[in-house]
Length: 91
Image (cartoon, rainbow, N blue to C red; front, side, top):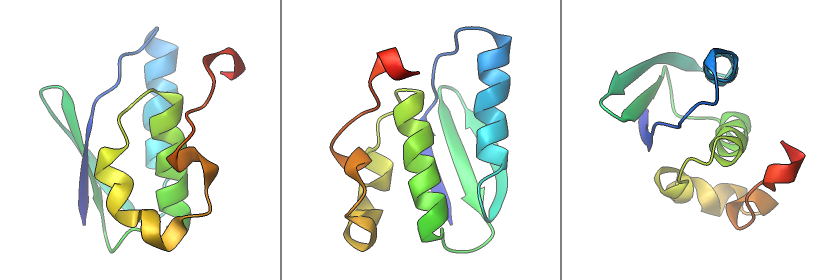
């Protein structure tokens, strides 16, 4: 399974390293491939509920549009981050 998102901007190399570390810790991740400004995240099997929530958190934290994840909203609709981004002063 693949999910393609718009790549984030980074504040510094440490921020970039943290982002990719968070991605690499997702359950079931196989690899991440960059295509211009887009990142394709490949999973070895269908994305789990836990990995979906973690990816939603990552997208919200790095201000990445969540539209590629909306197809998973029905099975995980109780997460408040579908409608509410993480406030910048908390990051």
